Length: 469
Image (tube, rainbow, N blue to C red; front, side):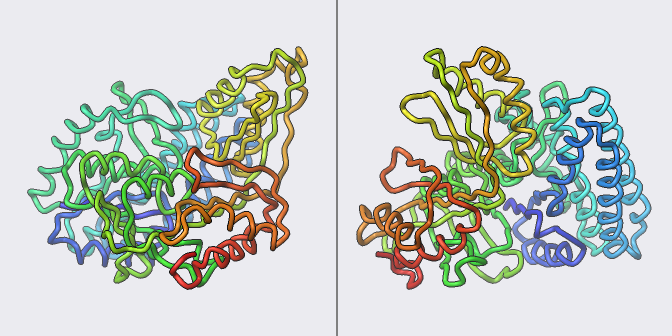
């Protein structure tokens, strides 16, 4: 039995879902359990609409509902044109998006989106894509059933980034999934979503469908967990920026965890731990190029492989600075910042605090910026009023570049060479964060400089030739 997770671009429309069904059909002999993300862009649109509702912008969430309805019904019409399930699936989509509108109305009345409300809204997209894919598989003659993971993954009530309660989750998974497989039914499970013991919907954090797949794989003792994305595994850089980027054929669990932590788009940071603990291989594959072997992550990669670092870049970010001007500023301020943003469902991509502890910088996605500042102003209102914090400032249009890992030949030269590339290119570094490992470092730079700087670093480290330093 294997677990196969398909991301948002893999299920982004009817054409992509058809390709996914081809992949699933080719793996039927291995008893696949399918995990799906929402269609690409859907979760972001749901969240942005809910935040607009909290500001009283009713038009935004109504337009979002119309956009989502049109997009999903279009997929239904194309995939289920001759299926008896077409009307039922279309009705479910309309019902779920009506629920979304009601949630937004409630948020508008409250004037804020609570952590619980955030999870309820952001979990809707996966329910839609799972239902469509399961019905489309059935229409193709492959028996399938969609399962909302609130029935399977039991979590705590840390809304926005809930943590699974593995013992309870294992009981639920074992009770529901194996009987379906024994009857020849392909389970299609919503990624990203869980529920508390009381049945309240939770989510596992942005990009959490990977994590869902790993949790299910661990609970089922899967032969392998596969993460299907839109690139050929984990590469030395984004191939859209560096066409010469190479796939890292094999990684250890520890190496993969580091790459995920630093923002590798193809892997959620928490994904590796469950499969690592269970000793289950994790494979990163490309649904647009299914014959490519991708990246295999195991406890014992080949000793003959050549180690290479990866350059991970992210754009569309904002840098938020919190400046203190008082001796009363203490370490608890940073802790409260992190806690308040986690409770509000804001992902912090990078966090730095000087040794003086009188200021801190954090990097967030640009679409989270306004919400982030509002949360911080509420959480730190006392310090702002008393002058302990002088201001909360925002710098837009920044990006991050992280160099993670080392080369086999000259491991100690990785970070110095990265700095040399920045200097040679003339990139202005806004902020730097280095991990406890001497081999991993992250830079905050102007967004306009990200792509070219990545190319300079990739070439400086010798990765264009796949050999490294």
